[in-house]
Amino acid sequence: MRIALFCHSLLSDWNHGNAHFLRGVVTELAERGHEVRAFEPRDAWSLQNLVADHGEAPLREVREIYPRVDPIRYDLASLDLDEALEGASLVIVHEWSEPELVARVGAHRARASYRLLFHDTHHRSVTDPGTMARYDLARYDGVLAFGRVIRDIYLARRWARRAFVWHEAADVRVFRPRRGGRPERDLVWIGNWGDDERTRELDAFLIGPARDLGLSARVHGVRYPEHARAALDAAGIEHRGWLPNYRAPEAFARAKVTVHVPRRPYVAALPGIPTIRPFEAMACAIPLVCSPWSDAEGLFSPGLDYLVARDGGEMKRHLAALLAEPALAAELAERGRTTILARHTCAHRVDELLGIAAELGVEVDRPSPAATTQRATS
Image (cartoon, rainbow, N blue to C red; front, side, top):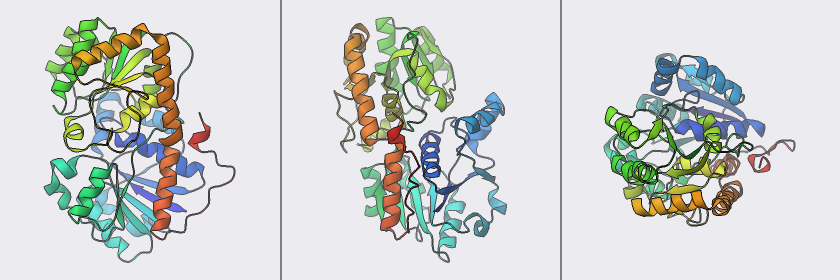
């Protein structure tokens, strides 16, 4: 089956978490024998920032890590949709696409036989509904929403006729434990600043506990303002800037524990959506402690797959216990990874995607018998 994917970028994950999951999905589809044609704008904001900060080398490296990921970089003004979508059975347009592209692909669908899906992995349907309402999805066959609450919003507001829950998941070809060697530090946190969407939370659940416990800690991420870098420095936390996402497993292997601090919109208005980071951390078998978020959809078993800290004091107690009791930490890490491998890999999400396509009337080819799925790469 030929599948076309339009997204902001697969080559760059600079402040662009959608690349993490989509790289894994494209790889999994290709390994099963499907032809995936991915398209990203030549002037993608994330890629421009990456090249400005780090040059072209990361673009070459990501192609080596993901040999199945080979996106076509296009200019919207000259994009020929007849050529791009020729022979496609399924087309997916990601939410971080230009409204003009969303509308043009929708208009093209009116005279084509493929099925067309809109993929939403952001909180704008809640925090900026006026912008989302301007997307023209009239000719789209459905929406892939990365949480039940997002799906329900599309249906309740009649932005789409059909909508399906399609959570993100871990690319376990890349996100797996790195064995050997002793950890170099107590704590690592991988995450971007977040436009002040979690400033208080980072102080309460990351900076304060690391400082008060005297932990050796490192933070990776971009867009940290001067006051944030000063706060990290004052707490004795090393800030190392952008880390290619595919190198996160190495960073996890060099630390004893990690934390997840979701942005405020997900905690306040989007229960059940953890975003990609916890999936990836648990896939790498590092003990994880989360600041509060509601697992309203039962993705995990809080307290068994990861620990939950209701406030900064509880975060300190959890971190201290995990660092003092290696057996407890190992049990938590193994339980988290087991849950990922059982339920939350990109292979599971590809199964779900192909099931949705079949429900929409796409004739889905059977996977090649020789194809290996991510569930076999544990």
